[in-house]
Image 1 (cartoon, helix red, strand yellow):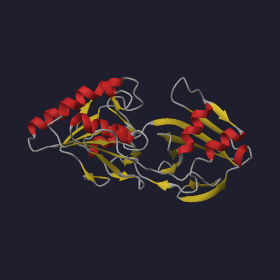
Image 2: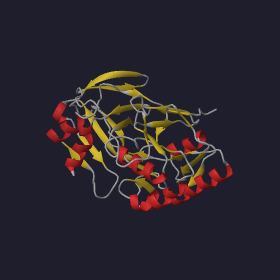
Image 3: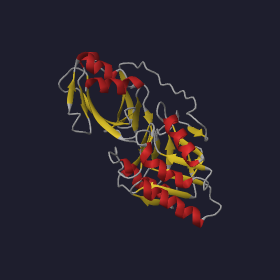
Image 4: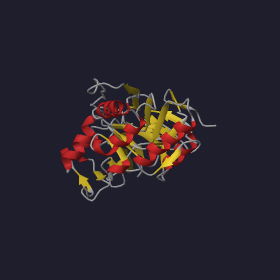
Length: 297
């Protein structure tokens, strides 16, 4: 039986979930088995209003989907170019009239997604939503993992953030360690082994998800800056698939020989890497990682 606990919060009686099909959302439909599906923000709000009309005592609602700092996706599962399929700080004019329909109907709206409440954009979005709905808005600052049985595991560094209606965003502080060692703990079968990363000569390939970011082979200082912004010294074992956006893939050669170990890593929200050979192994990045990739392009 899936847990009713989401990183310390309970599932809301009135919930709605992105109808897109992928592993994370399919697993989430098991965890949120009473949630209605939505293909866009308008239907998401309609689902919540319909539930509220049938459950007079319900005052707390929840939207479930993939997220990134300052944004929750409401209809595409991945990065949403369509403004009708996301709630973010870059399309306030699109979702504001829709979420305003919840005013005086709810006391809290919860975004169940990865990183939506995270700095720097998270507090801005939460405050805007709180002011629009006249209700508390909350979101998680970390990754939320859901396995095939609907069991939920949360990133230890994550926490829920709560914003009540008031003018302007509240203060926010969230720090990650920036310095990482060039010795890498990789998983082989069931055990971790330390593998030396050969510094600037290591080869890294970054595969982005849009035509504007073609595949690149990184060498020298460019590779070094990207690799040193990944905390390979402290892998995390996490079950399930995160409700986060896949922002690219990194392939790294460890060691200088031609037959050296090569690993691929799936990048989530530019801040968490998943080992493609050991799918429950994840590595956190520092804020420098996203900046290093941006500088490449």
